[in-house]
Image (cartoon, rainbow, N blue to C red; front, side, top):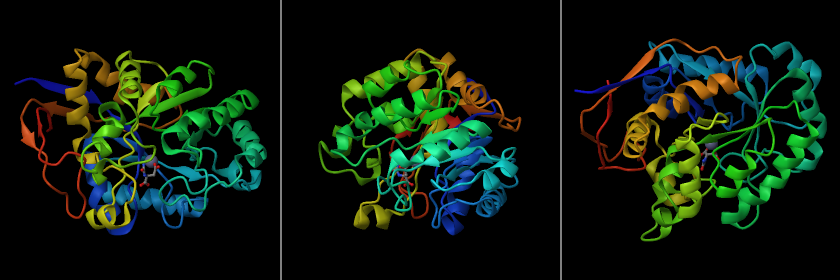
Length: 331
Ligand code: NCD
Ligand code: ZN
């Protein structure tokens, strides 16, 4: 039986929520990854060091007995002060920009990105990376492309600020990655595999509905080529974002729950493309290169070649591909 052993894989973008949902979903991430960027769009958001400390402790408790390192970016507010951030610089992973209203729990996000310059200057000065949900409030399929002008402005104005374009989805963003040395990207599993037709070309599939929305086959192919090339500025970030089945079906919440199937499906994707050697750089090495200051627990995660069927639901949450037969399984 063949095996794949991954040294300390990392998921550089995940939503673990809070309370019961956090305790329910965190083990799926902690079994497959030794650390993850845990997004701060909780209710209320993680926008102070007091909340930050409580959130890190809650996640670690939910992952126990597994050792798991949460990297939590603060929910970016335009009014953070040097007094607030400087003492926390050693433990702070980054700051996450959510333009107001573009995704789940982003109502308290930034209304006018133009007014962010003082706080971005402060982040740059303190060496705190910026993570961005890069979408405008324009026509859905164009939102990420329209946001490239904002990335361009930030990257030029703050050349020492490390900027990560989260969950990138389109071919223009792939090209844009080459433009600035200080711009990096995460790519999800679902944007690598699916297009808008999978979401709504037949019957609407609410479990594949997320922000940013999956794009065209051309965009997906550009993402695949980028990831299969082992690009040094690109790391894995699942954007696994659980909502209950009821909320998905009745409220139309955006977010795909992928946590339990991530490494098995990534292994399958790389294997199908004769590029299994690129799996480890994508899920293990790139994040450590791009964020050299993170502390990464040492643990091997092993996959073996044993078929299994994705269950219809995990508690109240439906995964992206219930009923699929997968070839790889986490031991
Ligand atoms: C995420 C969520 O549910 O928190 N939803 C999503 O569609 N991806 C938020 C986000 O990352 O945009
Ligand atoms: Zn997200």
